[in-house]
Image (cartoon, rainbow, N blue to C red; front, side, top):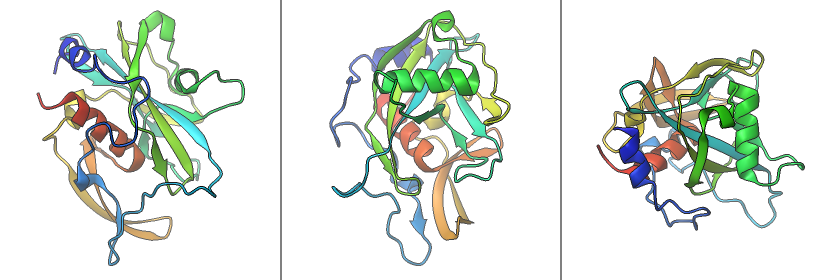
Length: 217
């Protein structure tokens, strides 16, 4: 899908959507415990200490005008999300004015994004999601770059930068089913195949909703 059409379809994306106000990601990507079936993701209770984070869904046009999105493969640091494909992003810091600033700051640190040089424009947000495995709420910030960004992976945090076509996450895009043990949990989940990897978990939920908001090609 061409970026000009994507921009038009995102023209009404809200600055701060209410829960349940946007189309949902495909149910096929949800992770379930094998043999038990309940969805792992849940909403935080009133007793949960909020741990806020932001992620940047940055779209840009390739040389043919097709929309692409910036992703990264996290380094093998032994953490909960090691080697997973993710959007640039991270924890909200005290000095951040808002989650837009968080998302742009983290993208600068992780993938070397120069927002001014790329002409980055924030066009809205997707619904905040809760990640039970890490205890974070993630606020996805959606932005469009006027020029293809020049990116550089942080040598400590990022193993590789990926820029797959946005079409990989639109309605009807392939979803593969995977069964594996993740941090002691036997899981079955669906994910988007991208450049020999599988995008799953919170990132798949965010991109699945982004695709649902944009709609099919």
